[in-house]
Length: 115
Image (tube, rainbow, N blue to C red; front, side, top):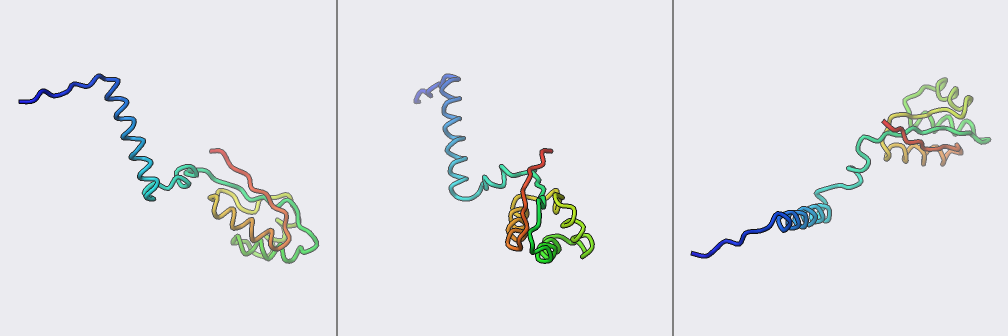
């Protein structure tokens, strides 16, 4: 019969830490853990319309395309800039909305909402 090696508590904690770190790294590398989703979890954003340039009609059309607003609502948002276009949305949707609005001549900003 062979004698079993007894580990000290410090050795067990160190070994466990290496295994956990390695496992997490492997899971991330293989794509089982999406770090971006973990970091962005629960964070919401607001898209603000800061101003519109001379292409006001194009900006109103862009506001309507990224929201479910009617013509009157979108025009009111454009007329009262700075104003909120979208609120409580995730980062990807916010970036898409900003891209569309900027392409149509609007000056916009992204603000993080802390819960």
